[in-house]
Length: 327
Image 1: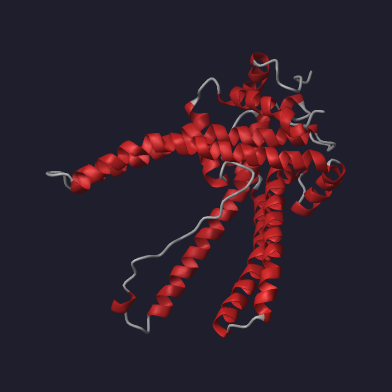
Image 2: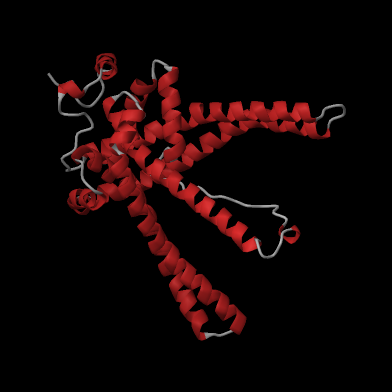
């Protein structure tokens, strides 16, 4: 018996190879921007901001709340802006992979409304998990302070429930990114309508999507290990150079600046060389699974006029692609 997620492994490799080869710097750089904001997989990342080493004792107590409020407002604005841009780039990513030609400006403007709706859905999903977690954490803190036994019993009971809630939220987020976003882009519909379109296939073929979740978990572990190994190989010399710059005799600030500049360049190289192929492969995998599922979705656009010259050449170079080029 074949499974969608297993059958799509080889097809995702063929699709990724066709998009990324032959090497074109512009394509890789644009994909690097997309992967930076989307996280490169079907589960996005939430940015965080850390404020440290603020000498509050040296400040006037009357302005401390004001400055903390300003920092909090700036941090919130950054998180919201990053989240909205990342949500919009989910649609840019899908558009580029389906068309075989990655563009940024035009798809971004076209997908801005859908991205805002996706961000709103993600925000509600996050709050649905964060609020119960915060409530349980508050009860736990009160229980520990009062040394009460009855609330402690309920906490032991609620922890597995919260674990299942968190797992369900992760699955919903991953399936929204991997399956609902392409349907939204394909049909120009909202998040809830996208879920209504996807839901019959999910309930009818739930075993297929359960296998998909397991396969994606295994792929994520392998991808994380591979990325860590490659990043370590790139960054180890930089760490050594930085150590020599800090503690070596006769090496001062200039050496440290050089080390940091080289580190930034190599970090960009790691992002392009590692994260881009992984992100492209993972997203093609989910698109091929959706294409194989009983949903009215085709990885290729139905109209031949929608195919770019680059995509036409891809079908000529790679006859193993699943869909034939439309007449």
